[in-house]
Structure formats: structure tokens, C-alpha cells
Length: 312
Length: 321
Image (cartoon, rainbow over all chains, first blue to last red):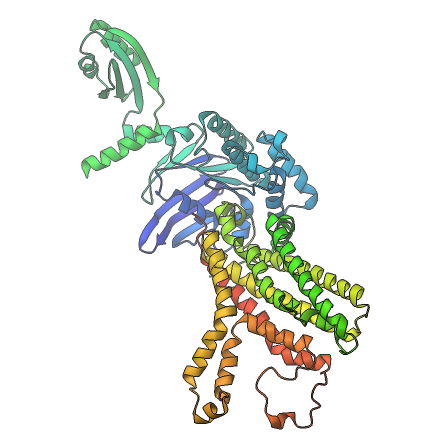
């Protein structure tokens, strides 16, 4: 257990009679990026607030670096840097003043504060606007300012709630790079997001949330293997012949879905690239494209629930 | 549940400094300050015009600066009784829900501080702001008096003036606590401001009327009272007790005792109690303070109770939107 920074067991949160979080177990290891993924209202933010001790726990236990958020909230908050969903700042203050305020609240030594603030803002690329009012900042800049605040704290764990929501692809990419850099510094990062595909690239492990439960947990490829069976997905484009039929005859292809026009998606149990190409070509059709896809969490998620609803 | 660890006041100083700076630099404060300053000075100026004629007749000439009313302007203390609540509500009505709406609240509370510190720091910053503006105003008034009247105040006048200043700051504290309580209860700043202003109107304008009505209903005047045209003692006592729920009454009564040294009692008084009293002679400062002590304590206690209510509500509030 010693390599866990966050351990939660049987965590529950009731709002009235409705369980927002219903008995989840969570382990976040030291220095990993852990994704808390799932649709809106699945209980991600509630879980995060409970980890921070900002909302009361209805049942279960939490351990953050050896402390219980309900009993010793200050110790826990010292160890966690938190970037809330749609973070806000004081618009009338500059970036430096905003961070200086939080640094003082965090209780850093006066001599230390200026250096910490400047370094953190420099790292997220806001060095040039350090003395500009936050009111003039774009959404992406605010998000980076929030990340600077988390980094400034030098915490063991950073919890980022929907860090990429509302950002354009460029800004998302930059933000994810910064999160990778935090991991390189040895900080464990807990990211929550409803955009599965966006964050799966940076996550070492993920937990998929649904209606207050963690339905799946593990690395992305583990999940793909468990849910999709094989975990190999190919996109194939070919024309001239009954392509779908040809592909279906290849042994090992579990599922073929037509995607309109000459495009097909194939789900396979093992690496079928050679077999697929051979089958298409020997049937006299023209092979235009064949790509292996990284298993996408979106696909995993959809498949999982389709499977469950199918059997239910 | 085990006792929580760490001090509840960690960070309160930081919050205080930030909020205090915000208040002093803010446009809202500028407007309020000018409003108070101009009305205050206007009231004092007319009082001075009036006093110039009567210099030498009054042993407490300086205190008259505060209390002298001259049509159409009310006296300086009446202006303050009206403006202090306005100022306090203006400073406090969005203190907590403002953080919430700016979405800075969860970020702040994720720092290693308790919620207590945030609330306390904000309250003290508001109180300090009120204190600074009242002290400034007070000094301006004294200065104006010195220049225009040409009579230096004696020691007791200064002491009574200072006591008046302290009571005025406590009075501001009550309304600041009311405003902050509203800012905890209502998510919308506009609703919070409206409710706070509504409460203020209720207790300072409507409450005296309501109280009279209640007292008359409970102790209807008998034949003797109708004959003499005076309410019964029960009725007066109930009426006074109820009206003292309102901080405005407490403030007005305290000022009566402090600024009018000849005031001997704040309630009904019998002829037998006046036996041997030399009417019109002022009480000593300590006796005047003794007279208004319950009123002042009432103001402080009211502040604390309101603050505790706000605190408990804030503690139970969910941080998320």
C-alpha cells in the first residue's frame, strides 16, 4: 500500500436518498496519471470533493498520504493541488497577485512565495503576462493559470477536474503536455473528464464511472482487451466486390461494421493485418487502405454498455 | 468524530489583508465613502451654523455638533444611523456568494485553511473598512468644529465622542453580519442585497410601528389610560422590550445616553425615583456608560449571533455548483 497516494474503500455519498457515489474503491499510485472518466453526473466531481474533504463522506474510508480528509483536512489539502471544474480567478488582480494570494493561504514562507509564483507561471508559459489582469485572459490561459497554481503548491497529488473542457484542440494538446511534465516531476495526477478520447493518451490507468459506480478500471489496453475481447481494431477501405462478406470469412475477425462507402471497421482477436490484406486482394478487390487503430476508450465504453444492455 | 486538527484561524490574516485592500481600492467603497462624507459634513455644517449663536450656553458644546438638527437636514447621528447600515450592507452583501459566482470559492477552500478563516477574515476586513471611514469622518467633524467654533473640546467631550465612535462601529458590525449572512444564504448577489436592505427597512422603519401595534393588542388601554390619554406601564414596557430587538433602537438609545449627558434613564421613570435629583445636571461619563452598557452589549451580542448563524450555514454548504 505504501506506493498509493490516494486510497479509497467503499466510498459512498448520499444526497437525500440518492446515491451520487455508491461504494467505489480507488487506488492512485505515486507518480502516475490516473483518469477518472465517465459521462456528466456519474459522480466524478463528488468523488474528488470527498477526496479533498470539501464535502462530507456518507460512508467508506479515504486515505491521502496517510491522512483522512474528514479528520485532518488541512494536512490533506497541503498534499493535494486542485484545479476545479471551470476555475475562476479575481479578474481585477493580475496573474501574479492571484497566485500570491493562494500561496499565502497555502502558508508558504514569505521569502519563498515570489520565487514559487514566478517559476510556476513561467512553466505554464504565462511568464509574459505575469503582471496582466486576469480579466483579459482567454479560457485557455485561465486553465493554464490554474495549472500553475497546482504546480506552485508542489503537491504530491494534483487533482484536475475537467481540465480540457471548453478548450480548443491546440490548447488541449498544450495542457496535456503540461500534465505529462508534471508526471515527469513525480507528481501523481488525477484527471477527471467526460471526453474519454482526449485524455486517454496521457493516462496510465483509468477508471470508468457510471451512475456512481466504477464499472471498469485498468490501463486502456487492458480495458480494451477485457471489453472488446481481442482489442485489435482495423479500419479498412476497399472496393470492387462484396467486401463485407470477404472480410467476414477471415478467421479471427469478430465483428465487421460498414461505415458507409468503401469503409469498414473490423474488430479482431489477434493481429489480422496480413490475413485481411490477403483475403481482400485474392478476392479480386482493390485494397485502398488498412490501418490499425489504437483501441479507443469511447469504443470500449460504448461496447461495454451495449453489451450490458443487450444481456439485461 | 475526532476533533479537527490545526488552527481555525490559519489564513484569516491573509484573507483579511486581501479583502481589506479590495475594499479600500474598490469603486463601491469610493461611492459609499463620498456619500457618507458629504452627507455627514453637510449635517455638521448646518449644526455649526446653528451653534454659533448659542456658544457659551452649553457645557457640552462639542457634543452638540453631533446631535444638533437643523431643518431640512437631520442631525449628524441620524445621518449615520441611516448610512452606516447602507455602507455595511454594501460591503457585505456579496462577500460569500461573490466568491461562489466567480468560481473562486472551491479554489480557495482547496488551500489548507478552514472555512472559518475565510468568513472571519472577510468579516474583519469589512469591519475594519467601516472603522477606517468612520474614524476619518469623526476626525473631519472634530476638525471642522475646532476651526469654526474656535472652542477646544474638553476631555470628557473627547471621551464621549470616542465612545460614540466605538458604538457606531459595533452598529456597523451588526449590519455587516446581516449582509454576510444573506450572502451565505442566497446564491444571487442581487437577492442577497435586496433581502438585507429589506431587513434593514423592516427593523428601522416598520418595526417601531409593528411594536406599538403588538403592545396595544396585548395590553389594551383601560378606562384610566383613555381618561389620562397615557398608555399603561405594561404596554410601555412591552413596547420598549420589543423595540430593542431592532439594532437601530439600541444604537439610538446608546447615543442618547452617550451624547446627551443629562440623560438619566432610557425607560419609563417614576416621580418617586426623581426625588432629590437635580434636573438638568449632567451625569458623569462612567454613569452614562453604565446606562447604555446593556444596549452596547446587545449590539455586540447581536453581531456575534448573526455571525454564528452565517458560519453554521456556510459550514454546511456544498462547494460545488
